[in-house]
Length: 476
Ligand code: SAJ
Image 1 (cartoon, rainbow, N blue to C red):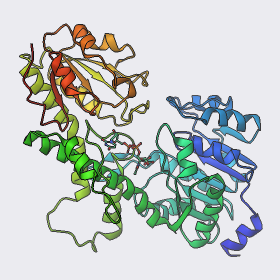
Image 2: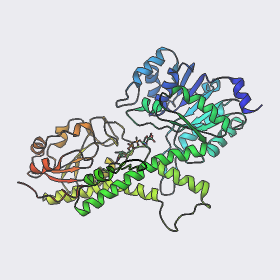
Image 3: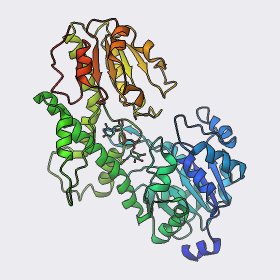
Image 4: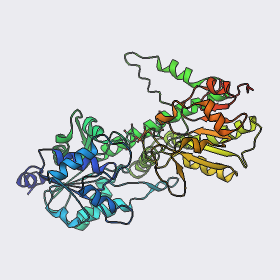
């Protein structure tokens, strides 16, 4: 029997499983469960010491995700009350399902050698393989190296189940496109890339995602094309950020304001002229932009190494972009050191207050935060560091303060690292009083403050891209 016939015999998708109760899996499971098209959804979560607590929370209709996620907890309470969703660590329940998705982190072990850590992902795929039955659909939502769905994932599933992809079961890649703070909306409103191992798999996966889309459309393609699409969209975003970060470094060196230039460049609009100029800053963090370039690089190494025509000896443009963005916390360190020197104080023994620990404005997400390498370099240089963040409650080995005044008290330097709303209306007069310094230092890593206002209050100011101000006359 063909896969198409097996699927017709099985009928429409009614029972779904989502493996990985995190930023991607939880909103996806809740939306599937809330759809009248589907009867029931299991959320699968390993009962591990670090994340087993999520199972009970979710079954109480509570979201384990910290930070604002509009509508998520209401939706969880609704689907729990309706008995359409349940979270479990019993993977044997996969056996009775029609479709199973995997949303598991895919970090890199070693970026230089392009070695990803697929251990959690392969564990999840192996669990699915153990309980796979004919006509079932398996979808990878995690961002993976191009080629992973058609090779690694297929091989493990076939090995564990004895079934064949495209013959006995459907297999696809439908990458997530969510951002913290707007998870539900992103799933419903963004177009959904759906890449099947074969056209029948693409069609079955389209049947799974169509009911949860409100504005988004399904964009069908092959599994490998879908993997390249996802890794590319983050790589290109990282590249765009690197381009404006490099410009910011140039503007500092040339003594001009990058934001004037940005406004100028951005003004050239009109048909056929796209100017996607992003914002320079203190660094690029998160689970996505910091690794997806390496998935793309690994993909071309694995799928096209011998066929790639590229300028001999040249570094990949994308990897160079990564290095420029990874350099920004170092640049922030140099701005801090130089500003303290202008204020007549060495970094060694200085007190530095970091404002913002999460990698994204107004979120609690601290994955690969650029604030961390900056803090480490300060401590290595003998500085005392205090950290404030309105959204982050704790972080391993880094005390996070919620009291902004306490964080800034006695500070020689105050450094804005994340663009949280709370930092938009800081009061330089009060900050100077709290620091108790004649010329406290202020470093703006996110274009949050008006340099003139701080300079007038006797601060030594430096900002990313502000070559027009970074060597200002010190007042008072
Ligand atoms: N950043 C800048 N300048 C900018 C934009 C961002 O310095 O102009 C920095 C941010 O401060 C942050 C980092 O880059 O540290 C990443 O920010 P982000 O806005 O890209 O946030 P992510 O990583 O959560 O979201 C990205 C998004 N990808 C794209 O827009 C192509 C999101 O749509 C994806 O769903 C997400 O990655 C993901 O999960 O892949």
